[in-house]
Amino acid sequence: SAMGNRKSLLLFLLVGGLLTACQPAKMQPPEPPGGPVIDGSASLSQWIGGQICDATGGVLLIASPQGRYLDAAGVRGVDDSTPVKPSDRFEIGSNTKSFTVVLALQLQEEGKLSMDDALSEWLPQVTDRLPESAHVTLRQLAGNSSGIPDYADPLMQPLVDSNDQAGLARYWSPEELIDFALEQGPLDFEPGAGWAYSSTNFILLGMVVAKASGQTLDTLYARNIFEPLGMKDSRYHAGVPDRNSLVPGHYQVPGSGLKDMTGWNTSQGGAAGAIISTAEDMERYARGLMGGKLFNRPETLNEMLAMRELDMTTGGLFMSGYALGIFEYRTRGEARLVGHSGQTPGFQSAWAASPGQDIYIVFLTNSGSCPAALLPGSLDLAALGLIASG
Image 1 (tube, rainbow, N blue to C red):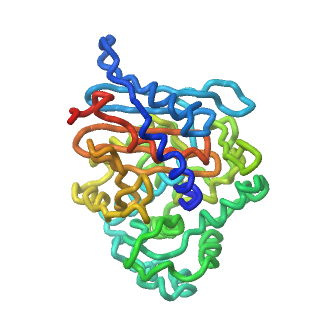
Image 2 (image 1 turned 45 degrees about the vertical axis):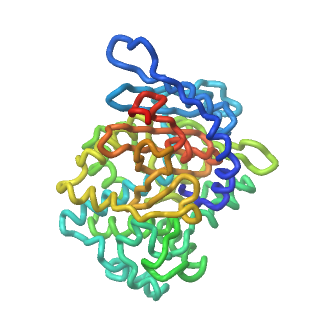
Image 3 (image 1 turned 120 degrees about the vertical axis):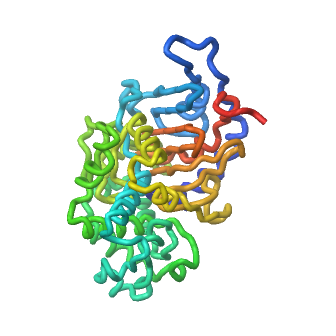
């Protein structure tokens, strides 16, 4: 998630026991005109307005050859009883990371960079200040194996815990975010020798992508991903969003309840977490990516999906492996799910795809303290009729 995982993982551990009680619904009989429809309403209601997630509203999409489910639940905010709609826009946080990796891999196909380039070749102003990072590669950035400390959790967690609206609204340039990261201390480990989730990696990768292409990130996301895939309701936004352009976001402030976090300046997420999207656009992204539509060569997608296995200590309750801006979900063992999750101060989200089975899951919520990353792996795909049971 965009804000790091330490505090969130504690929440995940607390709610983990609740997931065993989930009883997702069966297929909806009989099939209505226009093809089968999956009834995922039970799964959605367990989260929005249920015990697991504190969001006031959310959207769940489940799609497969066996059927489709798309619905919203709840309302826009604590003081706004307007129902959330399936077409509403949400911040997707760290789901932005895979988009940034796609841009880097596209540039590799064009011969403008190599994922095995050293960071010092592209950003010597960074590696000169952190000499032990000189041999970090772009691949290590994309795979969270660089050892470069995370900036996001130390920067944002104090802001949300204290409901510091002025701090949340402050604009940060990528260079300022890197300055802040370098103040967090030396490398967590020698480059390539370990694994640790760090949003700093993707701020750096975004800076390399912009430098190698000569284009701004908002132009690249739109031209290379959103437009080709028909993602008309998605955009990269580095600023305080117009409150009318998305669902309001919230966070459970200790001792104060859910507080509005819509004023968060998404520049603090940057190439690691500043995209705003919808459930159907995220499905378009997942289908386009897994279908090879974003790359010229099939081996590029294979490169992106090459997983490093993670144990419970590093990957927590929801990640069993991490590739390049993509992770593998811990599931009930019925199907392999890959994708990513995302967290900002006001939102948590997740998307997942089952390679080879044409199954896609998108879950968007308007709370930064809702453990959305746990939903894809908790779904009983057999009970939903998406895969054969047993």
